Length: 375
Image (cartoon, rainbow, N blue to C red; front, side, top):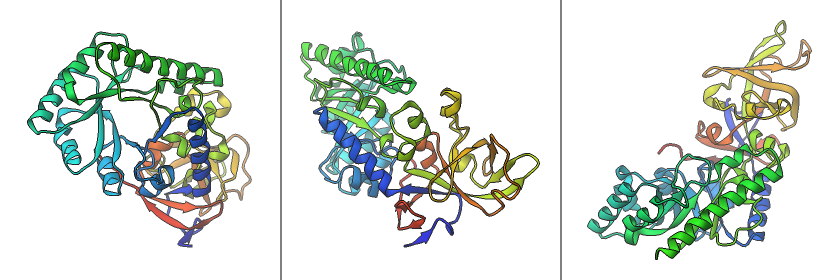
């Protein structure tokens, strides 16, 4: 034992290894049953130790959202790495360094001008980029229409750097039922299949047809024609994911340890030392039904048991205001009491912390796993 949740400096990030492992196993089984390859997205984890559980074979494919992550996981032995954010010209040299070092790096983009610049850069530097065209399957964040003219034009501009297509069904976060998730998943998969078929007809065979989001990955009825699924938040879960039904509250593996620093009996509130910097300002659960709205997070005791009626209603940089929907006893939650906050969106919450404090169903801290933050 390194320490205990009773003695750690607060605020800090806690990760329950047992819950993490169960989440990984459940998702692996669900994706395997659909006959496609899973490419774990490490954008939330940002940790070699988590990666070793999610993808224990170093030959396994992984996805990242920053080149810093790509470099980190490559140094750690992973080779098949998909940088799943549009590649801009300013990042060409850094991506090239990874290629020269032996990384089996995949990149993506959605702009014909950028594609032409990448093809010219690759030729000038005698490199072969493996680049996917990003398809918009309905979220409207990035990507080109699967049935629009830009698709084939980008493939032509990429030339030998073309490797396939990718899309992300982020609109699935609007799901409020299993039927919604399934419908969004079908839309995502159909967009990918449409794009791949059009490209094949134009003479551009897709080596990679990549889709992914935690809700759609395990709710899509058919993934025929898809080569891989990417997902990341499934590893940890969070209050929003529990709210839309992709996990249960008991699956939430990450929490923020905090301490009560002020108690107001008259106001039926108390302050904790976890604010916006420790929890993030994500209030995604505000879009859910009232019973699932969690402010900036729900509270648990040190053993991970939910404390009904308590939520972080307001945050400042280093302060969190906890309110209760019922009267609190005068001696409840005194200054110095310790609690855990379940996050709305684990990705930005985890990004504020440099290390996971590992527990396994108890208060004992059995390990510390570093995280890689930045770009």
